[in-house]
Length: 341
Image 1 (cartoon, rainbow, N blue to C red):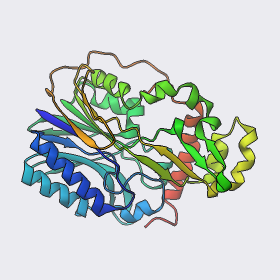
Image 2 (image 1 turned 180 degrees about the vertical axis):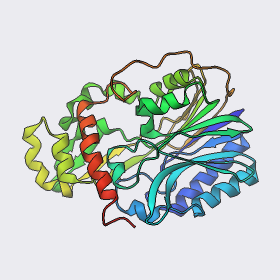
Image 3 (image 1 turned 45 degrees about the vertical axis):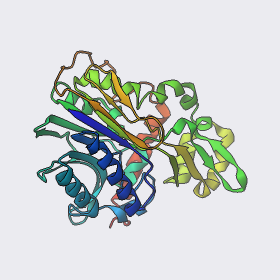
């Protein structure tokens, strides 16, 4: 079976342009014989941290889903992509990774582990999703889910193919731009980001390959590419939490609400086989990669490393773990607060 991972920069909140870009790449992938096509995380709205995200969350009959259903039926392909969905009253917002089949069936996985500030804008799902299809048993995972042991263990030896949608910024290269040209690199505040940068750079490439071997199934990984520019939620608190061990930077916390965070996305879209070998990787910022995969050709052979931490990715900085606990809880409270639509 030929699968495809698509990669491009999704312009924040330019829905029409992003859907047009996605359709162009989907048609190219289908023309190359792909039967299973994966889009990056939040490919329709782009990936940023802002309260505008809530306004762009879609219902189950939103434009993004209608487009995928149309293309899936027309091209006879299985399509998977991540976007924000709204459901219930009062509304709840999730980062939903949806799989659409040519027959029009819809399967939605809710990201179980939103990353840090993401918890300000959507809430966590509660369980994994394994979809029985004509292509085999398909599991779905979104970005920071990769960091956690419980998600991989839920799929280990139980799926024939795993789909992964990501939009991870290179935080160890991120810079905070303050007024009057003042710049502070995030790695100056969190020295572990610089010390472990080589390991962290492999999180969304080599570590995904290892995960394929641990789970015992091919992985089709679609990643956002391009520039990442955003505001920072809870700016003063976030800055002080990051600069906890760097008191010389503490005075800048007073201006943190006026700073923007800039980085680039990894853009490491690839297809891996069940032995953890890279079959093909996207070269360049925008494009696609196709590869022949054999669903269910292998079963988990490599043991998942034994660690006391809930994290499965190596070298997750301790400070980042603390920020996840502290700011993550504040984010969840904010999400449920008065701003909620």
